[in-house]
Image (tube, each protein chain N blue to C red):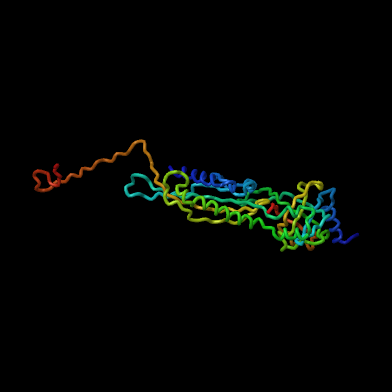
Length: 125
Length: 206
C-alpha cells in the first residue's frame, strides 16, 4: 500500500488530469515568455458570485486547477498579471484556445498538492 | 416645468458629441451589467437630481428653480495585452516576455478610461457655445461644481468603475393657473381733520 501523500497524488492525477474525465489541456506561459505545454487541469468556466448590491450572479471568470507536481514552474503570488494562460474556449479538448492573463494564483497549494489559477480576460491593447 | 426639457437637452447635447466614444441614455435603474457596456465600454446616464426653489418676496410671478442634474459615468474594461504576440506560434520568448511585461491591468485601464470620459463630457457641458445646453433659450449659472469617482469593482471578466458628475443651473419656472386668483382691493383713502373739501393730497388735473 502506498503512503497517504502518494495516494493523494494519484487521486489528483485521476481527478484533474484524466482527459477522459474532467482534464482539459492548459498552456501556461511564464513571465519570461516560456510556454509550458502538455499540462492538463480542471477548468471551471463560470463562478458563482455576488454583485455590488448583493444579488447572486454567475460570472464568466475561469478558474483552473492543476496539480503542482505537474508544473515545471509554479506561478508565485506576486507574479499576477505577468503569466498568460491558454485554455479551450469551451469544455472540450479539441476546442480553439483563448488567452487569459493570470489574475492571481492560490497561495495554499504547497501541501494540498494542487494550485488554483484565477484568470482575467485579456483584450488587445 | 423646464427641468425635464433641460434634462432631455443634456442627453441630446452629450449624445450629439459622442462620436462613438461613449453611449448616452436617460436614467436607468443602476443595475447595468458590465456586458451591457462592453461594446462601447463607456456609458453616460443623465437624471434630474434635486431642485431648490428660494421663496420670492411677493410670492407671485416666475419661480426661480436652482437645479442639479446627476450624470453617472460608467466604464468597463478587461486587462490589456498584445494578443497578436501571445497568440502567434512564431513569437519568440523574448517577444512574449515583452508583451506580458507591457500588459495593463483592468483596474488601470478603467481608471484611465474614466479620466478620458470625464474630460470629454466636461468639455461638452462647459464649452462656450453650449452655455444654453443646446436648448436655444437662456439658462442661468450653468456649471459643473463637482465630480467624484467610485471604487473599481469586478463584474465577471471586466473591471467596472463609476463616476458622478454634477451639473447645476438655474431657470425661472412659471406655474400657469386655470383661474387667476383675484386679490381684494383695499380702500386706502385718507381723511384729514380740518379738510372740509376732502381734497387734501389729491392731485389736481392740469
